[in-house]
Image (cartoon, rainbow, N blue to C red; front, side):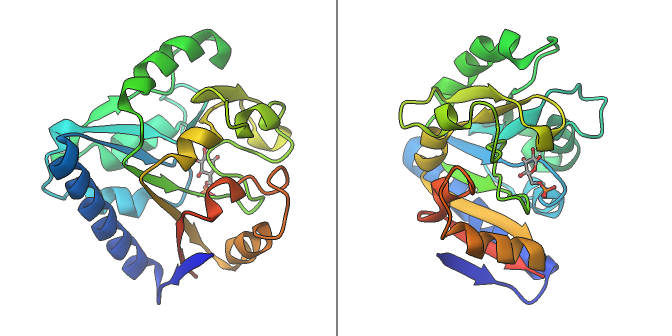
Length: 223
Ligand SMILES: O=C1O[C@H](COP(=O)(O)O)[C@@H](O)[C@H](O)[C@H]1O
């Protein structure tokens, strides 16, 4: 496992924003376009603030979430809301948001249209993931109803899942799309997640879904 430990969170967020900006710049120079895929939740806000101020060719960057909770943007639990408030600001306001939410009752009703919007922007150039202390990443939760299908090599890029721990129904990128990303980073904080990611390396992927990318990811950790 490739873990980088930082002296504090502020240094970690600054270093990570720098790395991501560099990798996006490389992708833009090589391909003329880039796809940045980012988590929601409580951890990545400071990286978003820093990235939004970076002078890049954001007009050629597509931004997509790892996963979304099936709630409207008026909910504080909306990952899209976080993205709009913290990343798609400043220079990064020029980026193209690829939606993972539509105002339907269930994610299944919107799945096909959202997948059609996502597919032209694959593979992901830079993937930033979070992780819960339960070892879920994106919305690949242990014990999710369709976890095995979402982990399969032939999984569609996007799936709807439900898990008791997840709260709302979820929509998530699946294992093959995450693994195919050109650069993979996992951002975690705190002793509980440090212990969880170490334990994940020795567990079956169904119990520790973060394992789908563990061999290829750089993990960034600060207390
Ligand atoms: O529910 C989610 O949780 C994970 C981890 O979030 P955190 O609050 O512990 O940082 C997040 O990566 C994912 O995108 C989100 O939907």
